Length: 179
Image 1 (cartoon, rainbow, N blue to C red):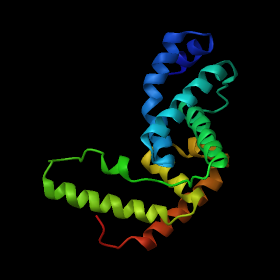
Image 2 (cartoon, rainbow, N blue to C red):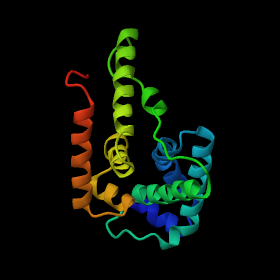
Image 3 (cartoon, rainbow, N blue to C red):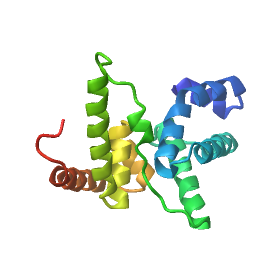
């Protein structure tokens, strides 16, 4: 990945295209979880990559992952979108519920899994905005502690504490026998 980024920084459009292909799903899912609209998520994802292309020369590693840099751009775009409009930031469950199940595709298993996923997402919605974002980045998007800290503009220790409080709140919200 690093060599692709270095090539893209020098203006190599094929390298940027490869980065686009690699990170498109990550950025789109992040934006979609925040806005809940496919059309708006597509627009903001496109704008994310356009800004990244324009700012490639300024990208520096400094402990950053390129994907985390893209998600930071997307996060800023989502924030700007909500600041300029009358919309409310909300996490949706559609992407999680559309995820293929592991194991045999038995209809009863799909129903139970969807019910569990929906209950977990309802519990996540009860968290504060920062805790929601932390849980989504860490567990739904699989971001590392460092990547989550960079995206949220916080130190790793603050993210650990935020994550701990969010998990404890979720444990209180969810029944013991869930799953």
